[in-house]
Length: 318
Image (tube, rainbow, N blue to C red; front, side, top):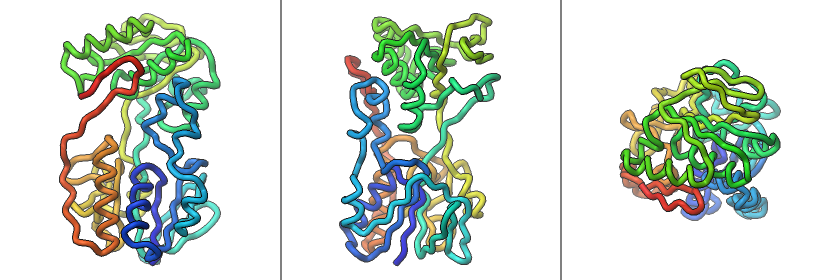
């Protein structure tokens, strides 16, 4: 049976890991990813940005791992169209036939409509390519967004010795995970590391060498990192007429409304909920692997998950 997985991230990798253990040799598996490298641990991007870890150390499996399991990996290609009636999909260079199709397309960074956000020194923080681009441009940095990712990005850049200011629209840092007292303690810990925090603030303009805050003040910035949240990456599913809400709509066994099409990870939605943490996405992959292998499957039930901040010297668990 031909199984094609669109996406090559953590959820897709867990799916093939589990499926090849549960049903070895039963599926002819193809993984198609837009990034030019094999799957890596995306949650380790902050240590890579901070110089604590080499990019190669984040790779999940090498070429031989896929080869010995008969898995075809296509890197650096975008799926441009899915034909559900013909059960085919096309990239810009080739066509694939599938019996089972899985959307594991993850999420995409949200870029707020700030004048100047298109400039070449403005970056999102989502991929290894983003990390390399940020590190290639020296000078003072402004990080917009005081959630988990923004705090980690600011701390990592400061660890590289850069002058960093963290700008956050909320009254305290990481308000979705922390109460006010904990947020103030985190702000103090970052300040001790030389990171300035501008709270209850936003950016009204990005210029080539500075940013303008919402109150009119300017800050020097030859790099601007946007850590302003993510959105489920559903454009391809929508174009293929797979039912979507905020994410790709699935049931509790990760099926879409289309026969033979499933979705897992940050791109999917169940009962109005989407997921940005790793644990539920991996659980979804295990459930789908069990179903595809023909096993009796327990339904996916969302649970509360913990979050640990990846900033050396700051022990923070929520």
